[in-house]
Image (cartoon, rainbow, N blue to C red; front, top):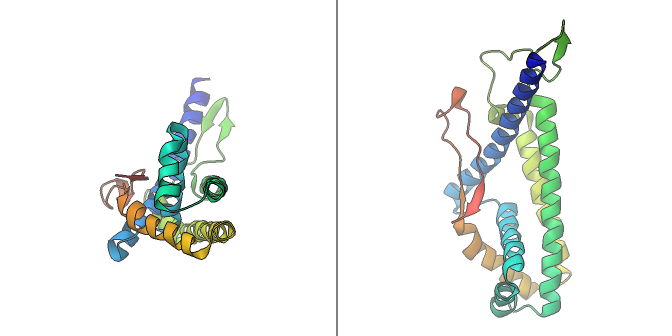
Length: 208
C-alpha cells in the first residue's frame, strides 16, 4: 500500500511539473515577443482585459460602467454584449488550456504506464539527458499549435465583437487594450539554465 501511494503521488507530481513547464514556455514566448515588439501576444492582452472586467464586475459594476461607457463610449446594450462575448472568449481559452494539459500528459509524462509488479508499483525512469518540456513542445510543434489556436480564438472573438459595436468603437477598445492593458502585463519565468537541464519554472502573466 505504501509503494502504491508513493508511486501515485510521484506520477501526479511529474504530471504537474510537465503541465506548468509548458504553461511557463508559453509565458516565456509572450515575454520574448514583448521585448522585441514592446507588446505581448494579442490573445493574452485581450484575455487580461476580459479577466479584469469580470473581476471588477464582481466587485463593483460602477468601475466597469466607467470604463466601457465613460472611457470607451459604449451604450449599456453594447457594454453588456462585450461582457457576454468576453466570457465566451475566456471559455474558449480555458478549453484550449485544458486540451494542452491533456496533450502534455499524453506526450511528455514519463512512466505514465506504471504497472503493479508483485504488489509494488514501478515507474519507468526517463533517460538522464531528457529534454525539457519547453524544448520538446517547440520541436514537436505543440507550442506553436497552442499559440495558433489561441490567436484563432481571438480572431473569432473580434468578429463577434464587431457584430455588436461599430468599427470606431472596436478600434477604441483595441487601442485601449494596446496602450493601457498590454504594457501592464508582466510574465514570470525562470531564466534558462536556472533549473535542471535549463528548464523553466512555472510562470504566469498578470497585471502590474
